[in-house]
Image (tube, rainbow, N blue to C red; front, side, top):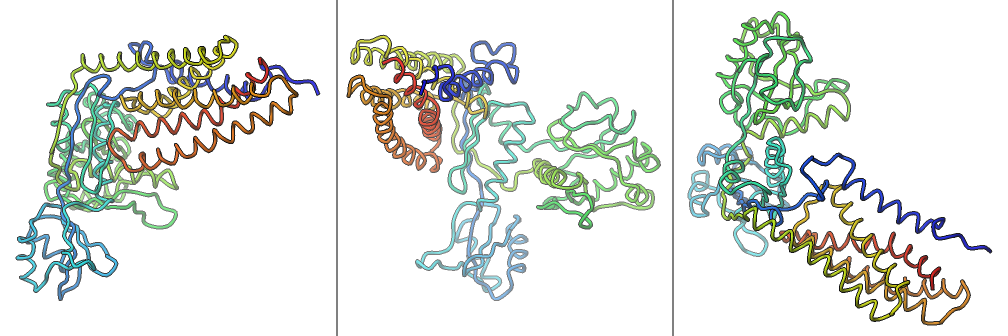
Length: 505
């Protein structure tokens, strides 16, 4: 049977296609910023471009409590005594409460004596008392911080959670003072009402300066929305009704809304006088008052509101997003900055230059080692091109998912070069070991080589998965890049190289 040419082999075609696709993602689509230069759509962490990092501690207490009253009464009692929100969670055997405030164990024990309660004990005999919050509260806090940073246009951010009460935030290109101000202060939530124009003139994600002239201020979130009143899940009146996010206005908020609705004509013509919500000067929601609400506002103050977001799955997702936005003015728990640091921009540029040089030197050195080993350009050139294509594919993957490349990620790329050349040498040696022979014999040798490569790569991937899942700071970047590089090698570049070496030897 006649063999196909290299350019018609599916494995070589797949490699060429993937490399071209990676270059498109890096340099063509989406279109890079004008000043991107050779970086294209690649994003770099603060250790390569400069910036700041913060270590945040979530201030909360998890405690198991035994008391002669029911759980809701315990929660209400603690909220009143500690001046903090308290959430009850059903434990396995012990009622567990999340106090969204740091409370000393002795202080809590003294407070519980007033209702003849006490801190429960775990099966191990230890007091069920921990500093921290639940994973749900931790993730909600992280999500709110992330949304706030995105609304401010800070794309070069990286937020990671460690345990149940720590969040690590990297802000590339942001000085330490600004970083503390942005993360450590609540977002500015504002409700405005449309005064001019027609319905539909205000769209989501518009900035304040784009709607300032056609809207008027109604109330800020801190004074207008009752604390803790934002619903935790989307709601709707009946099965086929629109989804929405519910919240309750304070006396000040309800009065300001009624006055604005009457003054600007929203009660008479609600369609052209939409109610807009802004977070950090970005529109997150805008819609007209319902006819029922407009009628009610003519007669009285209205406290309970539901911002409708639409029907079906899309409306449900928008409602979930809006709930997070409504809560973004205030984090569910207070945060304490327990650590911070800054990498100056010039130092980041030096690190970036050094990382690029290290990668190129590694590529050149392994190519020289291969040349010394085989002394044949027809073998060395394919190995060099294969390793280069792997680097391009890894960078394309990083650009496609907006992964921030940092020093550990660059170290991962260098590690992939090292493991990659080992695997290519295994394939080459198996092909050359029996001298020139039939095609079927070549295939058997290559299959044997791939058996060795697969086992080696699998063990490395398993080890790296453990490192990636443990969320050990920036070490996750090293682990993920190594895993991606190995998978690219196994499924794309190694098969293509085996086909090439089979043809040219």
